[in-house]
Length: 265
Image (cartoon, rainbow, N blue to C red; front, side, top):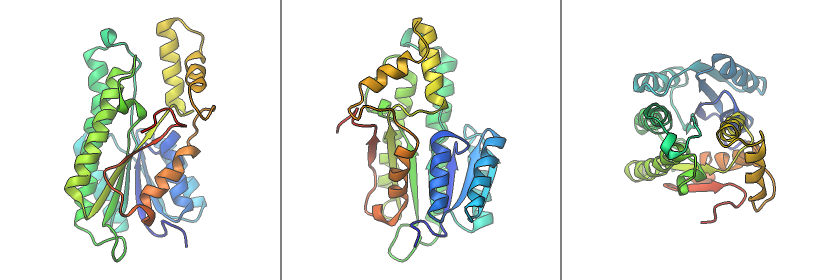
């Protein structure tokens, strides 16, 4: 039997990159997937690919910076599917800035999505999960997986606002795990540099600010990875499945580094 058969999974920022990879992996494991994103075309495309695998899927636009939209998002999922089993808070943004060049709008933009947006999406999802029956007898009522980052493990030059937001995600994860146990599990994943559109943005912005060749920042990061290669979205789907499945029912409040060995703790 597939590990997520019949479960309902909601993935924010699911239209591309890590979110899309997780949505498709969950669909292959039998989950009904709901893909939300600011880009409607991207979200619809992932949902269509999920349907092609024989599962139910939905897609719609949500701006998680607005708590009312997050609440409506969860309400829509519960109305259509009757429950919400898995919430993956993946939506995130970044800007490459030194501390002295970080403007208030840079800080506010990053925190509004990565911290505030995640917080209220988590809140909305938890409210629904706590009022429903367990996924199965003896299991939690739901599972929440937050996308943090190894940047949240310590300071990162040129990524101060982003690192602060991901540190907050780790702490929100721990707080939620304490408050919602034993009914829900709440964990986070800390990727390293992943070959996605976001890292292309990082490389471009960093290169422009330091007058470096395009691609040099990415290559520098790869050289420092013990596994000696860049991370792909497929490197993260196994951990995302573990945290969503019955295999992790006794795991909560944890933040897992999936980074090729950059951070060892």
